[in-house]
Image (tube, rainbow, N blue to C red; front, top):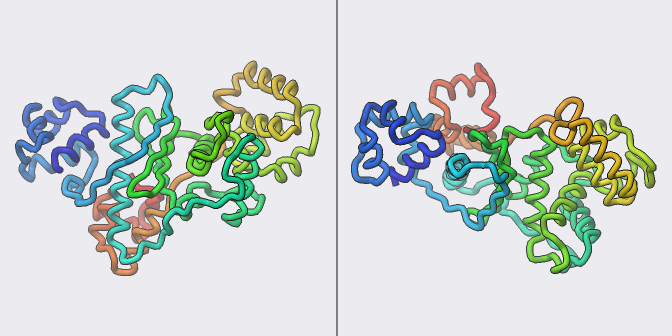
Length: 355
């Protein structure tokens, strides 16, 4: 167990055996022996390795182990295997903390995910996907207004959301998996908020549409349609833009983006899907965005990135209820005990998400 955790922490840090050995004051061969459970480091070496890897000593002896199942990465072709290994290690580390926190509660106050029920079980047209998104919003009592925090919504529905800050995470397009039957969605913390939200909604689409699509429907395209419909319902879209338009102003697309947390490009796709604009108008807008170099970086202020707060809230709730000690709370948050004391007394910046 120790060796696996050491390897995972080293992979997450991006250090080679030789680099870690130099920082820990041992040989690279000794690091190899540690990782193969052929030897155990003394307390002094363990402390040096912990500092070099950015983890607490307790990390190496954490009792909770998890296995991600049904893992589906969506990544760019230029994301290296080493970078993906670092991202995977970070995901496992965060999931383990969640599982350990849940195991400490007599009754964990987060419901298990319940698959939504739809009247139409087999979807034969992309318009059916639109109806599924509307139905899910109704079941979750969302109305037609924009969703303030999509991460918070998904977590409180029993979907574990992991935000990774690992190096090269900006080249990572998302991941979906399961652990102990719980759905897990992973996004990058280095993206703007509109991209995070679309990816979250897209992965939610995979979760609810899987095995429900007719053979003539492409699942990726269906999930794109679901994401747009879930974040920006048809009724709201038509209320903002009108039932039929011959052209769209860039400024109104920007305002719609800031309201709904959906990129301007996605809003254009959405308008075309709903028949608000023609395919010709959509193509003209795409040409404008390409000529203005807005496809990679849209104009105006970026939509704020989302973050997860539920984990930290539950840690402090558990502390207040006597379920967790200060030491365990600090360990779960990945900070030192002295930093935890300052954070608890609001003497340092809030811990909005765990590392």
